[in-house]
Length: 350
Image: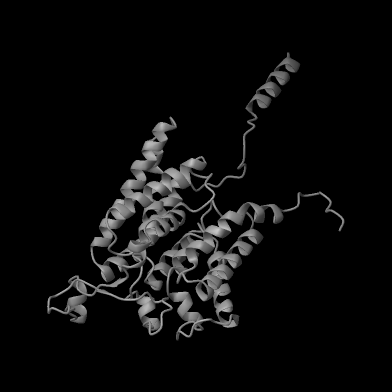
């Protein structure tokens, strides 16, 4: 009788074993917890964007987020998957916010709608949904918009100084050639390479009172959000650190082809453009980056090298978007060559 009981318990234990696909090592933190923490960390940059460019930025962010969520629900219904996850996990909202932050501050309404649909439907779900996409959805959508609507994306860099707040604080009024009050003046981006392009002070770059995209002008706001994610251990500190340090070193050693005053100033490269947004919020994406520490460091250094090369030698002023997308493409190869050796296994003889 005792033998039969023992055999029955053994059978139950065997039936309790579950064979499944990876990942097998799990964390107590859930996807919704992490995603909504990322949303929280992005709020300071959004506030800085509204303060600098006006309340239309909120409209752009809203269009990106609502389109991303609706597209997520629509695709999940087509795939006959639970749709409540689109409202709970927050991944579509994160994609929408990140895409909005990479757009000029007064883009027409169809740009965020088209971009968000492309990010979720094509970049994310065409590859299997959350956890299976090869590229960062927000960055891939930004690259798509750059190609599809170059005139709109590249010709509307503004320094808005009139939206109530700035008029009150700085007492600045802009007047056009006909003597009428205007809402904005079009100015070159901080990374513009044209002759005579305006160079901005580091304090302006830190605070965000410069032309640029909605969520990437204020380095302090982005740093606060990034530090929060590092404190919560949702991102690895060494990814943005190696990324930013690599750009710093590359700026010092690369010979420039243009004579703009800022081209050899490493601090200018760090605080201007989308480096902080990319380093803290996109190069740390859990899905599209390597799995090991060594792989992440290689990934970050590669992003830094490509960013500096694009800024120095291409006709495009910014290099963060394309550098991260290129390294996303190389992630499977990096994982292959940085795979840790199994415990007890012998290494191959060279």
